Image 1 (cartoon, chains in turn blue, green):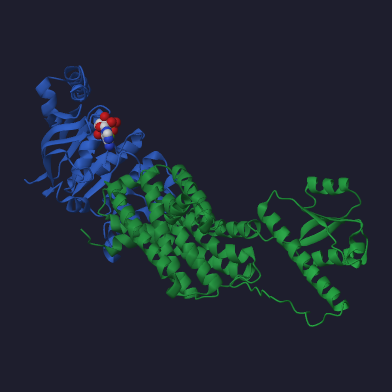
Image 2: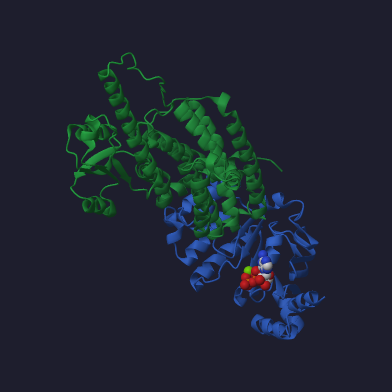
Length: 257
Length: 380
Ligand SMILES: Nc1ncnc2c1ncn2[C@@H]1O[C@H](COP(=O)(O)OP(=O)(O)OP(=O)(O)O)[C@@H](O)[C@H]1O
Ligand SMILES: [Mg+2]
């Protein structure tokens, strides 16, 4: 089985501040991987490095077989990304946004039309096509964002907290789509704060203070630490790891030098 | 790295046009602002000194004094509007600002002229506005000189000395390029530069900053879009808007204010294009620094003041202190003003404008280079 993501000792510093450090994991193709960890743990930073947007300060990573430093263009063409902050054009209709992203991924003519029909029916957007995106509710906005990220039928789908602030019903709809995509062979990397979502992933990565402190399937991880559910595991990790944020200590040390 | 993808470029272009069409304030700014600015400046920045309200205290009440007053009126500079009988009243008219000029003719004015003596009269000028004062003073002095000469000739003729009716020296003045010395003729062409600069720079900066402010840039950077595609896709619409504004200004300038260009419109448009590039680059630079649209607006306004004061738009640069002249030389608008005024007023071609054109082109190249570099870095 080939790897969708293969990263080794990946790290990122902003000036003195080490946001991400020594992240290594291998994700096989077709799997759903959940990324969990407290606010500011470094999930978004890691994701952005894997997308080829942020240059790693150390380590290396291959995404879909391409190097994130040298081949970011190839990666960008093959991944779908939904950023944590909603970032579609609110003054454009749903259809205009879809058209824009079709063009952005160089889809033309019949190809664009086919993809469009496929995505619209998969996400069931038919009724909202001519609505201004700015006037959609939170749940619908996220569905449109997902649709845009799927326009070019990406090999890897990267979702940064796609269900934050979304009601339970919309959340279920959203995850049904994600699981369906995974069944069809798409690899999915999704960050979340919801443990029920994390529990249903094939793989899970716990990010704490910029480090990936655990990686594996949810069942394995719970068994290893002897916890009944992910909530307990999460709290256990937090208490074990975090007496003090090591990144802050390092920053202080460097400043004192 | 310079692979340019047309599909992506067109997608950006389309999106940009839809957004501009929906963005009523920007549309208003692109269409209404040039018109409003043009009308505002065309009428308000009128430095022509004409028909100054004048108060007259004619104590002489003679044929000569009345002739004198008529001579003043005929200059069109002075407009004898009040006739008063006392110094208090003269003072009151000047103090209240109802009159800008006062002419006091003494009682013996007519008598002295008849007696072949020197008749004198007093002219008081409100010097609050130096331009007005200077114009009024030179007008009355010319009238005085003219009157003296004709009287002198009459007197000589009466004494039987003939043949000297003509003046020994005749200074014939003729004003070129703007023979009526209308300030609109001088200002309207310059407004093309000022308006283009402000409207286009602001719109460009807005369009870029909006992507940052609303977070849509987050998504853009993860797509295969190249910075060049984004740059052109965003700028081309504003080049088009720039040309619409330019035609609008030209049309109003030519047909409403009656200021047709003496030189080639084609040359004007091609050189305006170079100028437009410098403006787009300035807008782009502003957008790389500004985080919000408000900041972008403030920065554009910061640019407007020196543009008006130092570029030669209102004050001639030749008379400025060296430092200000130097600062003015750093503004692309300065060179563009030379160009538009040259084409509009003098009808001169590239033969005389090549230096300004060269300077403008250098600005365009440097600014576009810096702006696109900063823009690219900003994306990372
Ligand atoms: N451009 C940047 N410059 C400086 N510090 C940054 C930058 N981006 C992120 N950080 C810092 O890096 C740390 C990790 O941020 P990141 O956004 O990756 O966390 P996260 O796990 O996604 O958190 P959340 O759950 O809140 O989204 C934070 O402390 C953040 O302040
Ligand atoms: Mg995050």
